[in-house]
Length: 79
Image (cartoon, rainbow, N blue to C red; front, top):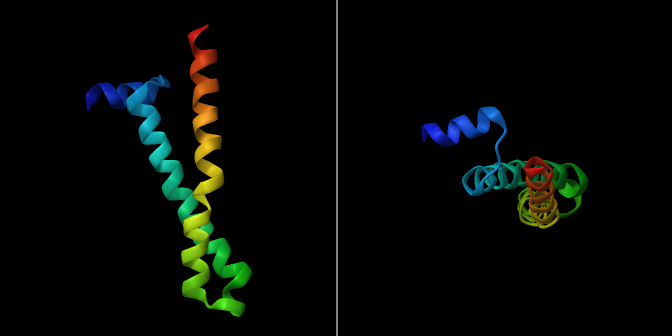
């Protein structure tokens, strides 16, 4: 656990920190998607359904972007 925290502090990206960053990004995108879904379509289809759909569909765009970003950061970090 201490090694993982040290890697976070110094910005080292390895498998463990990459997975943790991916999970953090997924959780934040689900919260943002639920809020956005409620704002956009809450009045038309109901707040619960729009929050559920927003939270379900928001990570579909975030996961590939985060994985690509982590690969790019680790590639540039190796040089």
